[in-house]
Image (cartoon, rainbow, N blue to C red; front, side, top):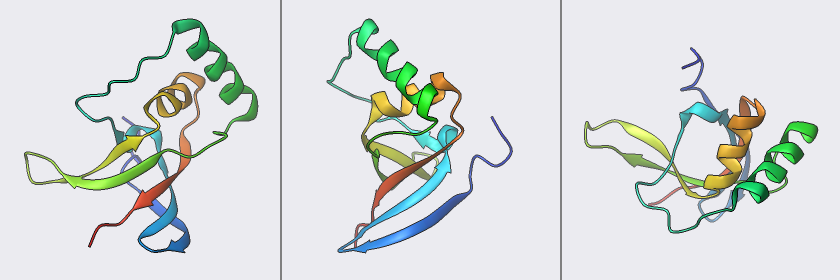
Length: 102
């Protein structure tokens, strides 16, 4: 893992508990269960588009969640395929929507 994977930077506060942040793609953790599956050919098209543009068209939705060890993790709520595509395309820093729970 890259040495700066834990750094998260707030870009814009959208209000109502939602904001846009930037983080290293390796800091984002997938949910244990994800019912959605993308066909390999469709995924490769997504990877190609991300590689070409070096960014995501739409942002993943994430929230901070405490893991079993008691540490906070950035968990993907929606956008697992986009995040995987960014990793496969070599994109290191991505923007994401972050939900802040009260």
